[in-house]
Image (cartoon, rainbow, N blue to C red; front, side, top):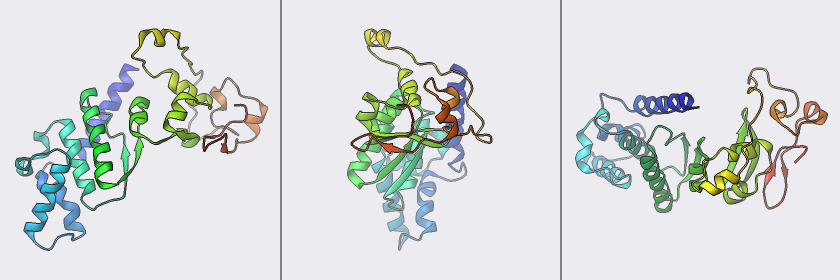
Length: 238
């Protein structure tokens, strides 16, 4: 588990760093979308827009002439977010945006995402493995297994009343700050290995690791059905 986490963090750091051209200043990195889409009429307007974007994500104007390698991981993430905001998007896909960051920096970046949402009215598709972070930032949460959605609900509803066996297992593994609650909670450990996406099981993709699996699960994929108030689940037996 520690090795997997370390690998994930290393890949996350690589993704952040490789997405920022080391030969370009912060000003040019953030200004690149403005250049591509011709969203300014003069160099003065271009710089004004870049400095405004930097201010939005908590970067100082003097950072504009520096290079990406001179910044911390959290600051590099802010540079990437400022670049994404340059074209005034209404929807942003955030793929593991905080996985490579320390916990304290994660909180700062997540809070910044929320502030930007209130200021700009932007919507996010926030993809992450850390369910505590997901719950903090999300209005609705979708749980996927082998590329298929198995449960979808309002954030609080899903965290407090999970239905799908895979969701139950994921939530049972979330660290709890209260030792008493942690001791009382039963960990649901999945058996078996994750099947290859190249050779998917018949029927329900989760059935090979599910304690509720029946013959029906092998014969037919369960439909995505509403269990009430928009709580959608794909399971025959729950």
